[in-house]
Length: 325
Image (cartoon, rainbow, N blue to C red):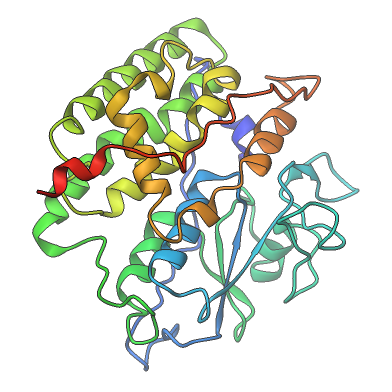
């Protein structure tokens, strides 16, 4: 069983992501096993991880950060147990160790791995973030970001500060699902398929698909403000978390260097637009992003040297409000 993304490469040299395993649902129904109540749930995230970052983005967008607490792990993978060689997400000993990361306030766990072992003594999969934790039952509710963001979107509206924001509206669901499918395959996961490929063929295939998809996004965004029309949706948040990391990490570390994000006028301005949506900028910690990728994949970057990067100002002006008319 794969214990981290570095192990998920097939014999042909292709990166193949394994599915999540904790798949319970929080419901607005008060009689459900996991009812949507304030103060019961806690989100464990890494600012470095795009899948975890989209959950935090939802927490902020929906105004759920008072109802659902959260903790960020240290950016760089470290040893999770003295008895084996596993490297993964760990908590700092104090809040001053790594700015933005905090010790586990609930269980005193040293690592995300310990959370999984607390939730299930027989678990053998990857120890991934996000982890949505139930404080009452002391277990993992869900570790699949796609399902966590859907719960945040609909199930907590009675306690959300922005209950009217619907990022998966019924009239756009078919469009959103369609966009998510190709964006996930070719962009979100596509950059990993480029970066973790161990043979030329799988890399060549992935990088062609990636840039075809980015060109497609650029074309779509030349005609409308957001990827599914002129309103912000789930598909935008899912695309954004990859785009915001693109020039700083994926171009160099994952060999996605055919073209930079900032060479795409519409995609670049679109990324700035999403970044400037209230709540989103606080979910982007570029320091953590760079420390993680460049420091946690020794097979790709053995010396852990962090490139200087472009230090792009995503709070600079953009032209996307031209579509508001």
